Amino acid sequence: MATPPDSQDELLPLAGSGSQWFGDRGEGENEAVTPTGAKPAPQAGEPGRGLGAGAGAGEAAPREPDSGPARPPPVAMETASTAIDLLYWRDIKQTGIVFGSFLLLLFSLTQFSVVSVVAYLALAALSATISFRIYKSVLQAVQKTDEGHPFKTYLELEITLSQEQIQKYTDCLQFYVNNTLKELRRLFLVQDLVDSLKFAVLMWLLTYVGALFNGLTLLLMAVVSMFTLPVVYVKHQAQIDQYLGLVRTHINAIVAKIQAKIPGAKRHAE
Image (cartoon, rainbow, N blue to C red; front, side):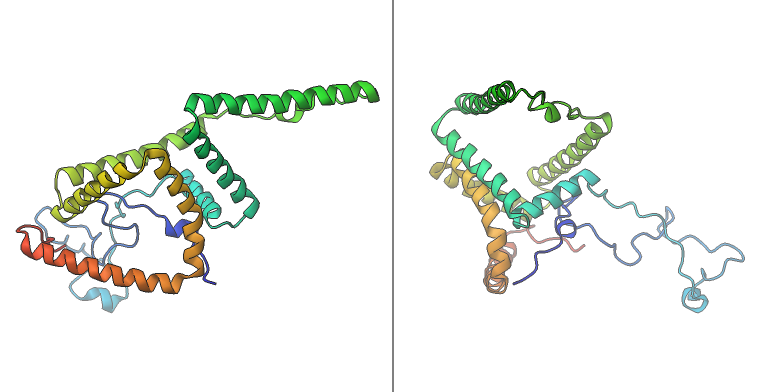
């Protein structure tokens, strides 16, 4: 069975225009350039910076600090790692609890309103805690013990969010909101005609999907898919990759034909 991919390296999100992954930049991309486009002249007495001197002196020319797109905040990487562990069922008990809770909540929302579901869940929780509190009080009275409040340990837990934690989650939210807004601006203002056409086709397909399913049904299908497809892919990775390669080849051929027929649809050379 194939090993699941690394959680942190696998989910580095796209940034900027949405078409570059985080990673090493191309050779020479970060070299300092003067306003006229020429490289700065070597300083007097400085070895290895003349024409062809880099290889002879064995010294690489110094580069400007990398000013590429910022990586996600650390809290986003931790959240992604936890999500990967859940989706790949690395802890069966924990994943089962989360998956079952999501299914129960979504099935309840398909039968009742949000207000009713919240009220019933609150009543169920209160019924359990009140019953347990009364049971422990009667047991202490019969046994003449003084164990105190049964939920004393949980009542003493610190559940307040510190300023640092709030700042971390705010930075994470800001990172994804900014990238989403930039991507939507790029698509709606047709910075790249091919990407905007793909987005238009996706929205057109979603109109048919919306006519067949409501939002809760789609959300339920998405949750079930999230907790099943990664495991199925790991078990049958070779066969799935083979079929996906065939599909990708056909799609690329169709896109190439469309680009050849639509003026201006061809991507500019990077």
